[in-house]
Image 1 (cartoon, rainbow, N blue to C red):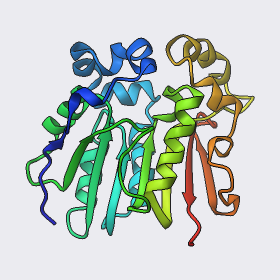
Image 2: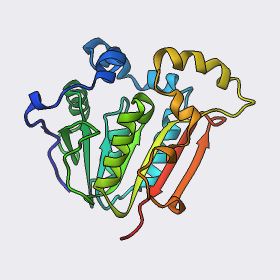
Image 3: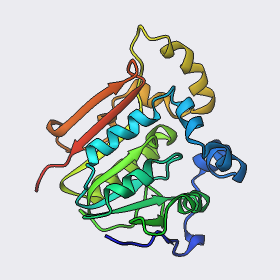
Length: 239
């Protein structure tokens, strides 16, 4: 399936950078030097204690090597995850990526080949602006821990809204390590400093942030690396 990877930016002035991103994460996602620094797969892998490839593999396994129908990735990702997803959608699928930061979309566009089946959109994750029940699957890869709880709730509400009945939400993010893991005690001070909203994901299960009334019978959860990371797959009930 051929597609352009040109970003659909719309009216840029109507999409404001959220306060939490501008005030807390400007150095990692908004500043050109930060983007150049973190757009190194080896560095991302180092930050994730060597687990980047493994976690990306979990996404690819869930999506499938020959994905059918549209997939939405909410927020750009450093490294090559999106390029790998694009290859999974070349034949029978369509991959769309949304981000609130033009610099992130521009960075992703540079990484994509002209013939890769990806559409890029400038939208806030809390107001996606896409139709209800549109996507076969929606991916959130290390986004929720960076959002205050109000934005996290809205992001998950929007992710559920745009995913079709029977479709899946795929979430990869931090998780509270097991009690015996030294990471539990070494990382907490660092996360409090650099990731001030991540503690919520240590203290609560992701299901606590899901819209009320969503069936809890269709949720699968796995943890990795002594519990530091989690993969949650939510299959939406058929209507």
